[in-house]
Amino acid sequence: MAMALRKTPLNAIHRASGAKMVDFGGWDMPVEYAGVLEEHRAVRQRVGLFDVSHMGEIEVRGPQALDLVQNVTPNDAARLKTGQAQYSALLYEHGGFVDDILVHKVADDHYFLCVNAANQDKDYEHIRSHNRFDAVVENAGERYAQLAIQGPLAADVLRKLTASDLTQVKRYHFVDGTVSGAIARIARTGYTGEDGWEIYVAPGEATRLWHEILDAGRESGIQPSGLGARNTLRMEAAMPLYGHEIDASITPWEAGLDWIVKLEKGSFLGREALVKQKERGITRRLAGFEMKGRGIARDGYEVVANGAGVGWVTSGGPAPALNKNIGMAILPVQLCAPGQALEISVRGRAVEAVTVPMPFYKRAR
Image (tube, rainbow, N blue to C red; front, side, top):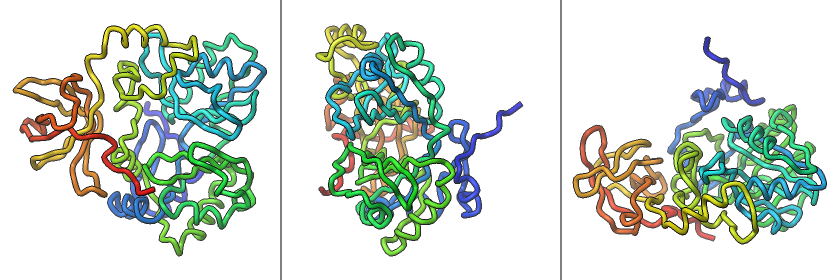
């Protein structure tokens, strides 16, 4: 018997709005409202609102909360100041990804982790199973809804609804305050390549907030946006997606995420495997490419060079802001430098492509 899809607190609103709904990792989620292209452009040029309440939250508390976070993540959480966040990961002993995560330091004895929706229970068990510290791990997803306001006008919209001084919240920082009277954690991380704000609130506040954010953003041209635009936006910004650019078989070195691995911090899960792989030298790595011929590279398509299969597309599709078809692929390291000629096997047809630097899109600061 098929499992019933999980629903966010905003599910009824999405359905009433006529959003196109899809099964996303066991969640009933909106993939588009007005259309992926329109939503993508709204976020690049103005502002979009996303329901990301399916994302998971895990809280780590206690005298040794930092020790546990340091043990299960490769980035250095000891560098975080209170109110600061960092992009990090959970790794297996062999160096592959359990998940990619955001670590927020709420206090010296309290860390708040945002994890991928489909991985929440797995991530929680992974952390819990390695908890030999004086710390408590809570699978807290049920206590949070999450709304994301993204785009160059995002701060203008949010400013109307909060007394918090957003000018003091730098990128990868957060503040605890209120939004429209609801107690909220307001984080500035983003997954679109634009300025982005995530609002964590109690699920019972989500519906009211959704409407009030849309009202506050009306003159800014705010657009409710679905997972389709979220995917094209993060792809232009070359941000990894679990199950695509990263998974249990891929290490941070191979994913081009060297910067989240701080070997100098000391022991952490997967460190020995990563040290050995670095000493041996990696043989494959994530690279960006754009299509030269007519055709769209889709996830899983084979990459061919000199007549032989050399890798696979991890994510691919149109880049609406660039008017190009782009993608990312795991390739032999010697083919990763920009300017390498490739072919993508598109439904049995070889279509020319070339490697290019990532990210594909960078916003004007």
